[in-house]
Image 1 (cartoon, rainbow, N blue to C red):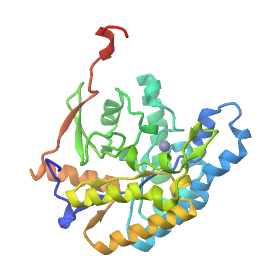
Image 2: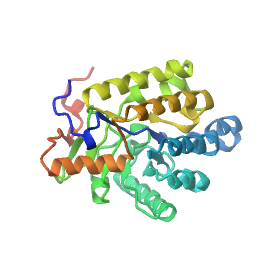
Image 3: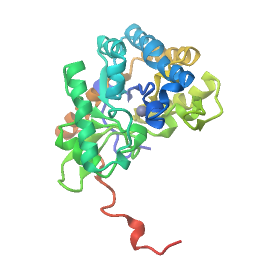
Image 4: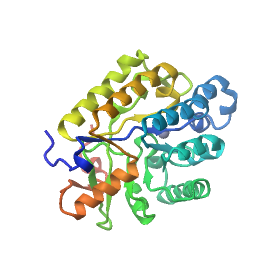
Length: 302
Ligand SMILES: [Zn+2]
């Protein structure tokens, strides 16, 4: 089913990293720059993430003896330093997730570079290290994003959806390459669990076990065929009491199998580079951006 399966460490059947994007209330202030502070209930829903869910999640990881990755906008790191401390205390990774969830596809290259650097400085100040990985807010990876990440020495990206296993992004401009650790919308918790008029996102909310079933089935396929399982979830949604109860039980069962490699994204990316260097893995390589110019320009109008 997978043409070029990757050898995982110690004969593991698959790699697993539950990635929590701790967006907190950045979304409200971005959508409502002039009156976001007036939307008290929406803010309370989103603040549940850093204040209640993150301590719960990192405690589960501690109990299970695993370390994972959180992607956090720098503005949220500044607003919720206790959440940052709790994440780091467990040995978990914090990846770059913009300054305040701004959209790179709508920015000039200069603006993108500016806010990437402003946010990276917050990471250095609060975590003691430059971030190794990036996830674009709302998967909004732009035609400039790859070159900006390569210029800054990032080790991996986690925004794209182009494969079941890690692959390489090759810059159309420079030929340099970056490890991509892909996921997809089927592993995102918004379609299952998020309903918010303020955020203009209204999905029928599923029972925790029903909503999680899609993640579990994705896992079983990754386990069977040697894939990569990267849920893209959010503390305010998947970290709610009943939902996290279901996820924590599932993770516990996976630990008991003994052949699932749980690791932070930076360690998975390092492993990918290692097995490429030793010749044990031939990754697929995709040139980015896929097109050098807008394709529709030369086509007939509809
Ligand atoms: Zn996000």
